[in-house]
Amino acid sequence: MRTYYIAGNWKMHKTRAEAAELAGALVSQLKDGKHKYLVAPAFTSLETVGAIIRGTNILLGAQNCAPEEQGAHTGEVSVLQLKDLGVQAVILGHSERRHTYKEDDELINRKVKLALQHHLEVILCVGELLAEREAGKAEQVCETQTVKGLAGVSATDLSRVTIAYEPVWAIGTGKTATPEDADAIHASIRGVVGKLYGAKAAGDIIIQYGGSVKPDNAALLMAKENIDGALVGGAALKPETFVPIAKFS
Ligand code: PGA
Image 1 (tube, rainbow, N blue to C red):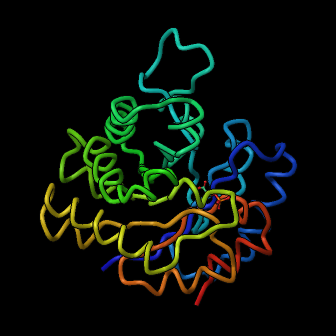
Image 2 (cartoon, rainbow, N blue to C red; image 1 turned 90 degrees about the vertical axis):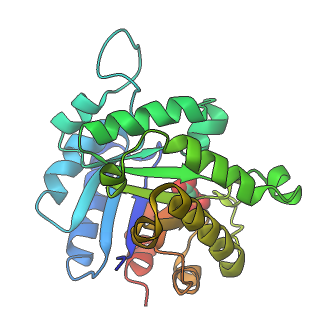
């Protein structure tokens, strides 16, 4: 039985004081929330936000991590450093990492395996570009990113993986995939997980939708059989837009 999982990706927004204010509001407004929740502040606010949400129903997530535990990697942050701050989950393969910072499937897979080895939960993002969708390749792109992202991940570790389907053309653009189009891709990703890990794993894996999720489209998306939650960007930056998504009905 899958639970709904709503995650807020704060991207490169908010100073520590601003992050603390948002985290405090979410703690009080989501304390009676019935789903699984996560917030992923910038690295600089992890400690501040972690102290505020510790012991609540909101998990602490990071937006990225390095593919190595330590070493000469100027500007990177390692899983050990994230765990030291109380981080419980990490978002990997976000389209901004794939397309702006040129992360490929092989690099993302190394990060996925390292994070899982250190017992973090992982949100693995997949999604097609507009040109790929228009060329009829959306399913194929998501299949490739899923298969390559999960290469070498054991069935046991898969239980700590969530997949987020985020069509790149819908991120931060105000354009949302229709619930039907999103559900079709979610079903196809679930099929891919089934081929790799069997029917039970396919039935259990949580697949979030991301890309311009808002209070007024969240319930319609989540009503679909294969949509198990949301990875929210812009609307996660304010309690008045994140809380209604997190408490959709
Ligand atoms: P958005 O971002 O909700 O602003 O479209 C989603 C994401 O990038 O995770």
